[in-house]
Length: 549
Image (cartoon, rainbow, N blue to C red; front, side):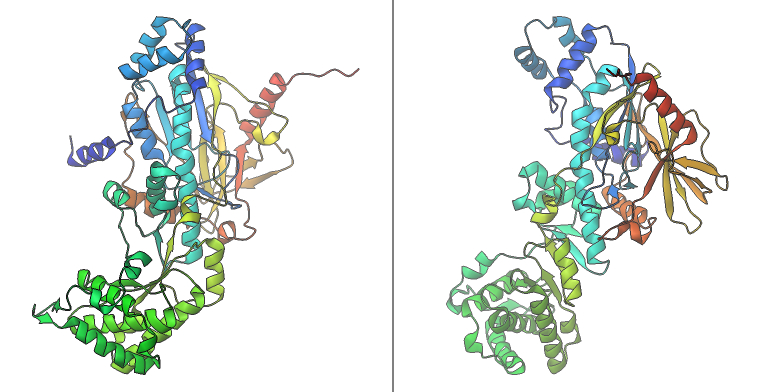
């Protein structure tokens, strides 16, 4: 076995402990018994997992959660305690042999095909195609949905923040304390990183998923100091010479000098805040990033920070920057940048002008857009509540529908055309236009030949007869790969950092008008002429004929 395969297996081995067969809806198990009782043990089925509408009033979605789905399939097994619980919970009339059947059930006969994780995806195009015995395929439904729904929603939300912020601004996820429970917090940290965030404050997520962890200190650290007398020691070891510097004396001298440069009285600044910043700098001299809005950014926070940062420089260290967590973020960030520029010029410290400015405080997409319009000077946004809770849309709405049984296509009809399913075993292709951008996603029956580059393809709206167009693709991408077959993973998911890169690569294939924040252009999803006719023939066969009286 190759070392890469061994590493993949080790990485896949870590599964969330709550993701197990009983993490499902009761009706999946009652249906399984009814199937078993009806003699459907050997029936084979095809299920599609897809969504009907893009989230956040946008026109794209990022597919995520595939790796967790594969872990679930790999570890699917009812334990003895699971069987005992089901015996106590289900009606006493259920035959004992059914529990024996469940106990031996695994996913060895399941075949799972999927779009690559991190890809941009669209409504009606199946993200997963599950093939195999009807009963086990049915039992997978709820768990697969819960693994894909939030992951894809979260990755999409993060990708939207990344696009709004721009590629030159860093994004940090700060949402654990506001997340929907511990598991929601971990998932949010993981998929925020996938969607384009640069780091997280969540230490466990950093350990589990190898995500960069970032953080400074809270207001409570600052307010825990009252006077300069609270400083435990006034010294700091020099970075190069390792001699002890009289750090507090340096800081006080620097504060006096900076106050003259900024024309701010040191008497107006908080000594308790200064004591806190000195103490934090002594603890983290090479990573000093300070919160400056505890009292007053202009009269206290910036003055105290600059004094400590300059003294650190004298001791051989360079401060990182500041965080602003309240107030007028645009105005205060510009004020901070002007302050840093002024100090850099007066003291001939060019690096001081490039200090990082981090902003937090209930930030959402609209906040960032507004800050851009106001000409902010922020280098990094720390985003929590709106990101991890997906406040604009709390659920993606993925569904899992039976499309074939024993080789026979199945269709779900509805008076709401949007809920009519596209039947049968299908393939999906992405067709690219002459400009290199993705033009349309095409669903067709698996028995049809694949579209070819340079060959005219008739693409039709699945339910509106007049909506049709010819496409001559410059490139054709088959969207599905087989990830699970014959009881094992046959295509290993990529490491998280590569999935993250895939998101940005995939987004670049879309035209800008599809990705824009306001009134984006809908991306087209079509079916082949063959599949169109197949859908409507099956529809007529299954639709009841009414009577007029």
